[in-house]
Length: 311
Image (cartoon, rainbow, N blue to C red; front, side):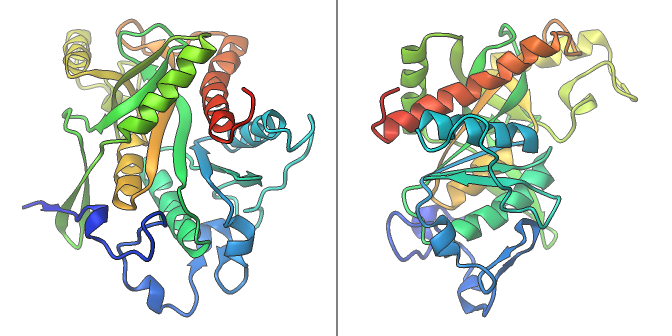
């Protein structure tokens, strides 16, 4: 039998706008080592380093997240073109982390396990740094369902492969289920920004989060395939009918963990192909590079507007 985890309002916290930690063990620890970040509460002054953070942007690729911190630094007038931003996590090769002003940019790798580990340590970092009113946004790429390539999808709910809006994890042999709803207010704010930019198609839709890029996403071109093209089309059409507009591999645990911590969060992904038509990404490198800049542009515009800068 599955256990429904407590909502943030049921958890202990010291301030309405600070990060919720549903783990009483953390406050009893003499030192908390954020191993995969190469940071710790004894070795680093986390509040001095990160206490001013208001926006955290995460994405799969270290290169993309370094490019984003350069882009947002220029947009906010905090850095010059070509500035080399240091990797705060340079002592480890698991994740890359960059910071400029109130913006933190972190890579999370591919898939639920990789982003889940990163989020545990990120949420604890924000807690130790006493950050408040933080927004976390995942920016990335995905496969679209019924959308033209280059469309940007804002995730309403992250759904599993059976189209259920929940994230299930086995803890001590028991099923723990967390909600995967994301902030509607934040999505509406991002959609308003997209309309003001008015440069690319942006839609609100549900996102299917899978555990695999090939069979799990109904691709016919993996090393294994246990279904027909007809099976694939029926499955993807059923996903579309369930309100799903894109597929990726991180949104469910991202939505669940941010929600359980009381953090407003959003997922902003650009579609690289329409999965109703094809399995393989066939656009040119130049086109894909331009597509990948679209979530960065939208989120950058949102951050500038939040900070009262001229967009």
